[in-house]
Image (cartoon, rainbow, N blue to C red; front, side, top):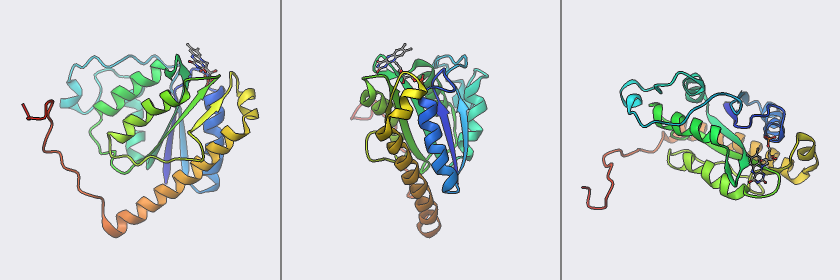
Length: 207
Ligand SMILES: Cc1cc2nc3c(=O)[nH]c(=O)nc-3n(C[C@H](O)[C@H](O)[C@H](O)COP(=O)(O)O)c2cc1C
């Protein structure tokens, strides 16, 4: 079992990192291999809708998106961590996810997803909803916890005092490990459910 964790914060040792490290410790105890990719301080531009990825299966820009795509393909689960900026996930991470999810051609079906947000004070659940939408359009089951997956703080030291936030991260990691194992076992027993791709319409009448 492999889980890829992405940190959208520019701070490799900040609040989001503290939340992800709490999960990594539980994954290690549960026998889940992890890799953490630090994204928030990389130069990652937005999607220009050029359509090139439709032909090549990779983004036209050679940066962290194409570097991370094979790691995502190999992973059974994906954790996305973001600081909250103006009540949304931060821009670098959103640019990254738009391009990663639209440029890759491998199936994300039944890879388990989890979103984690870090805020000083507000905007957590709005950001959490945005991050979860990439999973829910991709056939990715979403792991949940004992609260919405959030920590509070302005520094990693603050997050260490957010005992409920850290507990939420540990429970999330345990649930995610269980879900990945359960899906692996169910795939052996039943196979994955069929995915239809026949229709791609903009209007209800199909025109
Ligand atoms: C541009 C910017 C916008 C921010 N907007 C918010 C916000 O809307 N709500 C909030 O609670 N914190 C906001 N913050 C604070 C950080 O999101 C918060 O301290 C977070 O925990 C930092 O995580 P990090 O150390 O992983 O970067 C903002 C910070 C920056 C730099």
